[in-house]
Image (cartoon, rainbow, N blue to C red):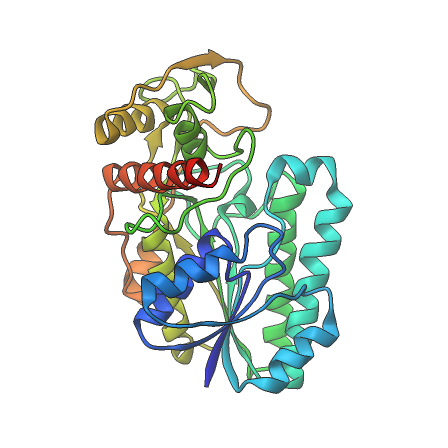
Length: 339
């Protein structure tokens, strides 16, 4: 029996593949490389000492999905594949709705045809929108603020309806907060081109000299130092949470949701200071105006995951910064050697 991982070459997907390989699961990856590259597979194989099976196909191509299912006895599916940039989703909402929704439906329909009913879906804390209370529990009303978050919210609704229509379905949607860091080996991390959308890659680009300074959006929030507070979680912890979720599917009926986060909020300036301490690199920054729609604070209540999935984030902020910088530095060395 095999575990299918859609988007298995991406940032979170690739780290989950490593954790699955470490537990000797037989893995099949589907990826169209829109957020990754073939080099990721070489790195996964190097870290794990194994050769994973991969198909470079698009989930919008139903025939290709069908081919993969016909070739393997798939028992579990992780669904990571999808467009993921918030700003881009605002600029091109139809692209996001078309890609994220149709690709999910294609995958789910193929699963049904092959009697595969175990699914772990990569959702997001973006479904919560502007939180009304902290920490955020799974029972919080969902009200996504952008097309990216809305696609995650809609797919969760589809999965709920699906599980209500057929009792064979066992589905877990994981709403995770702010994944950062990289594999401790330095071989796998978050790919970013130009000016990154996320804080940690942005800081790494400044540390490596590719960008002159970090822009911090607002220092007048009601937080410890006026900068926005978020729940940052090490990507390796997040990957382990996905494996625990898969192994918990046998104990559930229908669809469930879980937060994956540390339960601790860190401000932007706390991240900057910890990064400087962990790496010895100075991070120049400039305070600019707030971005519309940004919440002052957002962090998870991960109690449900602790109790049911027997999972808890283990790595702290120092490790997140240290591992992110090791990945960035290794990438820069490779670029210099190539050029």
